[in-house]
Length: 316
Image 1 (cartoon, rainbow, N blue to C red):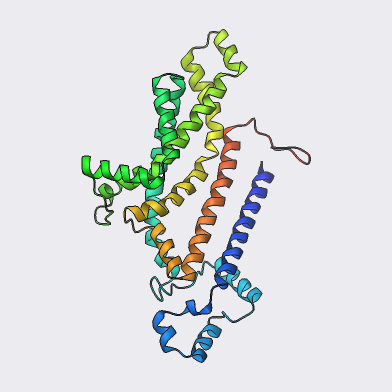
Image 2: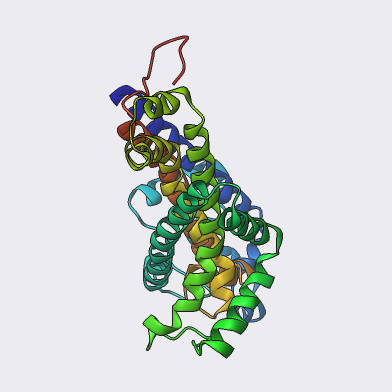
């Protein structure tokens, strides 16, 4: 397991490195005029612009720029923002917004996991009955309806009927976070419910469950000690990765509810050509994504001792 963990960790690092390289090269394909603000583009002469570009190293050969950028990333030096907050370090620009997005993401992930697994268990216990059909209908609805439509329904019901604020406020983050968290949780709840039901139904149809019933083991012990325990192992693999999907979904949710998180920041940075902010946010998402997949694999191996890692010619 140790060798496999190191191998997967190295693969994750290579993946992040590839993403960093691609994003860097794409940013360098933009016209150099985007390095300057609108006022600078009007006031500065071509010679003055070239001097600033040379001082910033943007006229150096691409391999040299790339090597220098690798060094900056390793030192956690992501440069300064030039458009969002001119002259402010990118880390400071992202810091507070990152905290808001992470808080909403973590809360929605916990809610999604708890509610989704509970719904999946109840569906399994009531297979082909009314509640099972209701849960399936919810899953189909969430996956079939565009996100903006479901968010609009949550907004209309939550604000008009329940009286929750429709706009996020940093002065009152508790109450104003309710509707964004609900929207972030909708799809994840459906996914956890779907996969919990599917894995548990698969376990119920296996021979060892039939044998346990023949031996007189109670249904409660079968469900708790065997069915749910074994069904949760493949489900656990997706828990860390689903955190990324929750954060990714916040790009739309945060814009929808005016949450000052990373979602609006990324879109604003792209529109305003704030290269350093865009590069840093993409690196952050890449790290979260690869880390989520890596931790999912490791978590599955820790939970299930039956999973063995073999050498050449074998499979996991």
